[in-house]
Image (cartoon, rainbow, N blue to C red; front, side, top):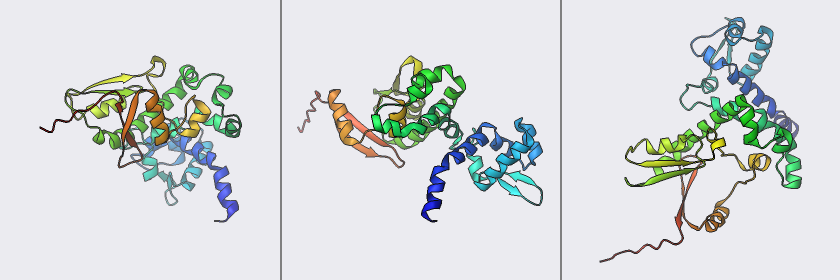
Length: 266
């Protein structure tokens, strides 16, 4: 692939995200889960206009989201499409909807301005802070919640086995939204106790965004280990260790700087 083609793919990537979102939002994965169907039947099940549905399906076939049998003129599911079913194991349905809401997507159009000024563009483009906007745009808010729930599920799989706790420990999930992560950590041991610490207005949402999303949307930033060390020091804590998981997450263990451990060698 030459340079022009590579850049073309980068510049037009938003259209792929739009196709994935439409397929997920219209429920095409659920419709094709049981059997192959023609375009008219798919449109009937999805409540969509047939000719426009055919155009969307043609794009989905080009992306390998959907398969098309020319002999029967029917569309079939694929492994990619199966992952967009809400009930699928390791479903990507929530991520497909949450990452492509206008609240998450529109500020990216003015990323250059955020880089120029170091200021967030989301409040300007949305007319409100991100979570205030989502409070009044309930459908978008529900989609972001689905995304955060899916992200949390992945984190639980990777992180929970590395969190050591005794039976009298209290696990605190700071910024834990609805408590999905805490539930996953406590589920293997019902004797543990847990507390979710979260603001009331964001109790149904998670707040984990990558660094550029944060630059655009939130008054925060992504951090590396040295930055977390400084943050912990400000909170009176000391970074004790960083433990990588089997996935893309890391567990940071911090201890109170005032606590002195006395080891009895006798």
